[in-house]
Image: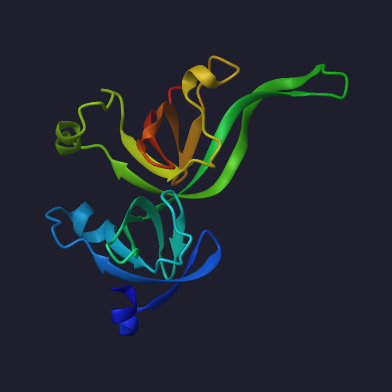
Length: 191
């Protein structure tokens, strides 16, 4: 099927490698999120695309799901990225002899991370009952991003996300919801 629509092929990159995709909007969408951010992508059977990859043309998309068609083409659900974030971790600096230097502070562990951010509304809380009462944003990002659950940090202070010049506290990092993507719940930064 992919080769039958050569007139709709668009050049793109998949995690930095050149590729070709047929992009279309999600046709069953009834919400603004669905209409603006949800896309379908059809790749050839030879493409190396996989869930969690970033597909780039004039916009960036995260690959949420991948299904193989009967003709072995790769049919993907894509979500258009809409945020650029920085991940910060509360850490102590040490000298060459492992002596603490200065006070512990938040330092950047990942910068310029593209992701999809969604503000948590009452409707989203109904659709996703696992959201914490304090969650104000949910993010989807690649699993290669170094963001930790609060219990995984070496201090009792959770990771921080900087988005749009404002800081948020990481409360939940779900590695299971989407294959090769992180689903992160953020609350207002309390530090």
